[in-house]
Image: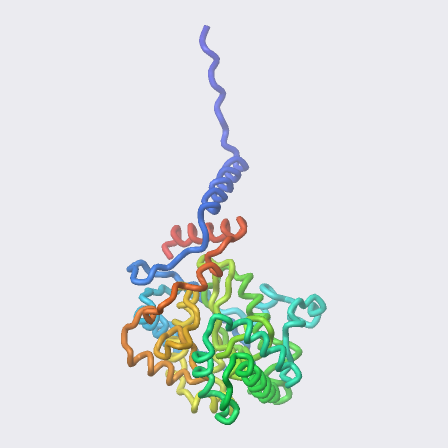
Length: 378
């Protein structure tokens, strides 16, 4: 007898999908966020998007080109990274937040988990803010913090200060006093609306921080929205000494590098008195774009090299600018020439933040994006 012939196996569409999903899960189990190696000739793809508030001044296309070119140059010279831009266009700010953090809109605000962390610009909140600053700077020495603050605080304030607790009490009072002045300013496009609009509080750092955590596709978000606030989350001395202004920050996210950079153009564009005073004057359009492009390397140092803030390294790209003196920060670092990573004496303290344990779903999505990038040639 002839042996029984084996029946053919038919690969259904469902079977193919199931096998593809299983393979992707296996890859994701072994993969985490992508790392970027300084000094490598391999380009580092950076997906960037512009989030635009139409009521505020913004970089035009020419300024964006200057910003990107200088960001590339500074990242190469100071961090040893070769950035490759992937332009994902522009998104209106309301669309961005309705997608990534709709709670800030009035109809959803009853579910706001951050309302208890937001401090109004009133002296009564100074002790709470001082404690938040103290908690967030436990690893920084008192001398380095005092030296960083001395140029921003009024000289009589800081005389005789000899411990962190006293220093942060003064800084908290200064922060809330300066923020109150910003909160009183009108919007440049409508005098009837405040620059820090409480009805649509796009200026609150905590909402940007929460939205950035949910981002998957963007590595860099460039926005013209002013970020100025006070909160008990992520309190930092350099932001407090600007009256709560945040020029840039890097947050853990679902992106392929484990984090996302957010940069605001308003600190280099704003024409209101407090911004001009903190900057030490006006910036011409091209200068503003060039300086902010250079400053973006500071945030890429967080994202790609996982560096912290070395307040005792004044000529280091990872040392934040004092007040809004970005022109001086830029000039000081330019004078040092090529100085990758600033030869910092400590390891990358943020590595676990961006590359630590991730849920399987996040790793799967990250792996899918990396495979897509390879397939499309990015």
